[in-house]
Image 1: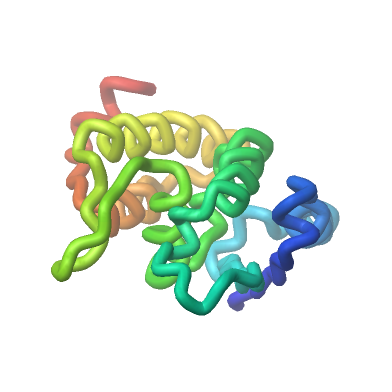
Image 2: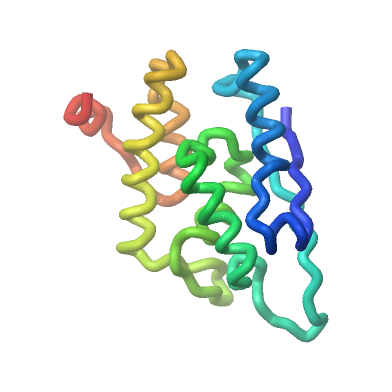
Length: 156
């Protein structure tokens, strides 16, 4: 089930996480925060000049909101719709450039981001009683990394 969270300029400019907090609190109360079928997408409504060539991830106010979100919910990538939202979420937090081939992340920054998220998510998943590493491995594959099962043995 995909849940779309609306973000408007007031929310973004004021670093207001209430739209996300509301969804997460409902899932926590229902005991379904780690349910495999729950996915979050963000719909961002941020007015800008029609001639502004920047992508949303290049707008400082939007990036700052996502940095705050990630600081409060470092396990947020687990809840995202990985097909559509994970690359954009990553772009909000990792230096990148756009090219005709698509988004090009700074390789070292992406590696640090991915491994940081792996460690955070491994701990969070353990707290949630999620033993399978399949979803975590799939998430890293979407970002271009392959984790060997031996890696997980190292960090138990």
